Image 1 (cartoon, helix red, strand yellow):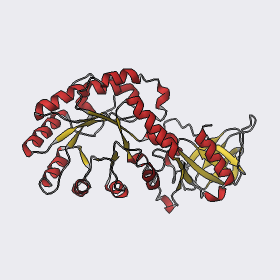
Image 2 (cartoon, rainbow, N blue to C red; image 1 turned 90 degrees about the horizontal axis):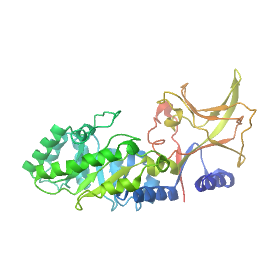
Image 3 (cartoon, helix red, strand yellow; image 1 turned 90 degrees about the vertical axis):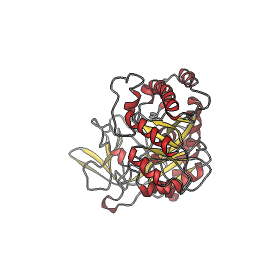
Image 4 (cartoon, rainbow, N blue to C red; image 1 turned 135 degrees about the horizontal axis):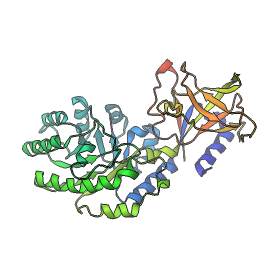
Length: 382
């Protein structure tokens, strides 16, 4: 058990009345440590992806940590985020005129996904100052420069290489300054694809500068870090050596949400009722997929439910070898609303289930309005 979980268990035992379940509890210290470790390992700037966790209280408390910038993917996130000194980047393939207008007014750096967005940006030229643009490149553009590793998944984001060249020419003609480009090859892809991405990006820098006739200043190499990226045995020393080949005038950045927030959050729900059906035990909880959709594993071909820590009257309940599992289910009218399996333990009403690794996407990627069930509350832990 890590230090943050020990602290949370202690607080749930001593100050149970201070926590209204279901809830998320976020460790500010873990967020700071995760950010620092990843940034030091990469040796580059590190942008935080707000969509991973947009808890306002947490972002306000951690605003000084995200000194290199925050990526925003919607008008809602833009309006939510308080003004601060950290650079802000807007990046959304469906960003419309209203979003682009708001982003420019808020002095954000625009990440351009397609040629149509570039046409909208041209309309604002001369009316408001526009930060140098960043062009988002589809992963297929990298294949023009470095052979794609097998099994690379295709996606619909960013510009094809032909459109990239058109965008560069348009920016030259219209006097729109280009800061650089952004590439991203998918979630959980970093360990496998980081080196080939950087090798291709090196050549793309040359192509951009030759086309534009001036030096660019920014290359965003994306992210795709695993939740437990430190255990992947990735050779960061070799990777930093590769990155040192980029020209000195290039500010290299990566971005992440999962690696920063994932292990810094916990989901806590209370067992309301316990019952058995055909010898299978269930604990009916006051929080389920309506508050933490990812725990239900609906997108997994083979469901392996998370096993939470069980607290009873403030103490951890240890499993027993001869006791069958109990399945934790939520409050919705959906048979898929199974969020956890407690092996070797018969849960009881009043037990608290504490799920680890719930800091990234668990709250933000959840359909809370279903049945108008209440959303989970959020608490911060120093």
